Image (cartoon, rainbow, N blue to C red):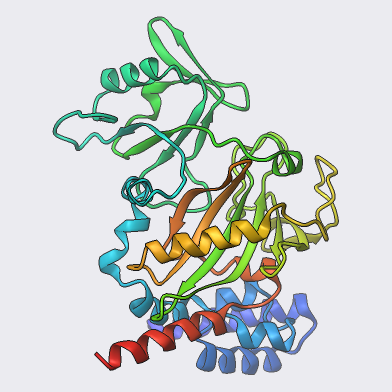
Length: 360
């Protein structure tokens, strides 16, 4: 029964793609089945990335989720996943290694048995830390693994109403701090001041660069892909996962932006030259001090040898790159932004480590 449902689902989706693409159902079915057998591509990936329309380079280099999973078993094994998946642990790791990151004001975890330093588990403890910090604006985000900026809130001003702390959000709404507290551990972090160049792109969000690095057995590091994520006017976050933001590929050789798009949804991706709100030009613009940024990221990767490939979310400040968070596993979406797949680069790193381990 389950097999019949899968076949029926593929048939229905292929018919729909045939209507929207103008390609025959038979051609699409053959193409998809071939892609699935060689590239382990799912039907959803085939649809989202419009792989039936992509050029030869994109199709041959595309790294599917299923194929990436095989590589990650060697490159970033599960035993080290907590270094990136738990944002509090990841933050502690970055601080310990001297890698620039934001400052933690408080770590709220209701399952903690006691409060110490910045770690708290009750509202009154958290309120005291926030009052004592003197910070009126900060970031609130889940410490547990999340995606696409889900659960992230920017406190633009912290005020008191009826002896209770209240979070003033970007959209002008006021939410009692108590309403944020539940079963999910939360990080309260200082805001990161981005450069004028990045603020000009969009001032309401922290606009970041996702930079992918690969560590090799000889301790060399390669920066193999990058793209910039820019929020829309009034938005707190820059993430593309849920649509409604701006993205550009970054030429990792020189930091030049290219392939600027407005990502509204998988069915609504528009090519653009400038940010639709700020009107700042994007296509062809160079990220300032890119060579220095790239060299620092290579150094950072070398410090975290447990993870052989990392997707870094990087804020660009006047003092250089500041790491918002690290990703031991990142989604495949960025391949759409850079206009090609990063499969060969990941496979090259994977092959190097397989060979290295086979000799031990």
